[in-house]
Image (cartoon, helix red, strand yellow):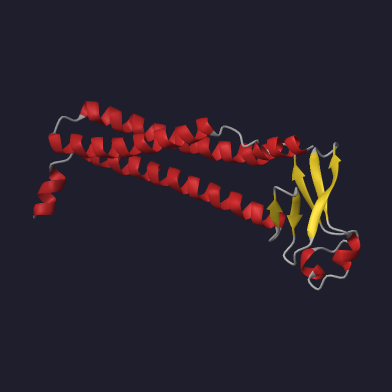
Length: 188
C-alpha cells in the first residue's frame, strides 16, 4: 500500500523521464567502458605481448629480444621496428609470433588518427546522450511542481550533469591522442 502511495505521488511523465534519462546515462557509461575495452584489446592484439622501452626506442619480445627501429616508412606514415631474422628464425616460440623469415615486425603509425577518431566518435555519442538526458530532465523540472518529483528529477539531473562535465573535461584535455606521434617524431 505504501509503494502505491509513493508511485501515485509522481506523475507518469516524470517517472518515464527519470527512467529514460537513467537509461541514457547507463548507455553513455557502457559506451565509454566499451571504448576503453576495445582500445586496450586493439593495443594488445597489435603488440602481442611485446613491451616498448622508451629509453632504448625498442620493443622487447616475450623472450627478451629487442626489435629496433629499422625504418621510417614514408608511404605508410609509420615507424617499423624489426627483430633480426636469424634470431627470430631460431626462436622456440616463432610459430606463435610470426610466420615471416625476415624477423618479427611491429609497425607504429606516426599519426594514429583512426584510433583517436574512433575514441572521439564514441565520446561524442556519449556526450550527446548525456546532453539529451539533461535536456529532458530540465524540461521535466519546469513541468512538475511537486517537491518529490522535483527532487528526484534534480538528483538524476545532477548525476547526468556530473558525467557530462567529467567527460567533456576529458575530451578537452585530450582531444586527439597524438602522444605517440610526438614521442616518435622527437626521437627521429
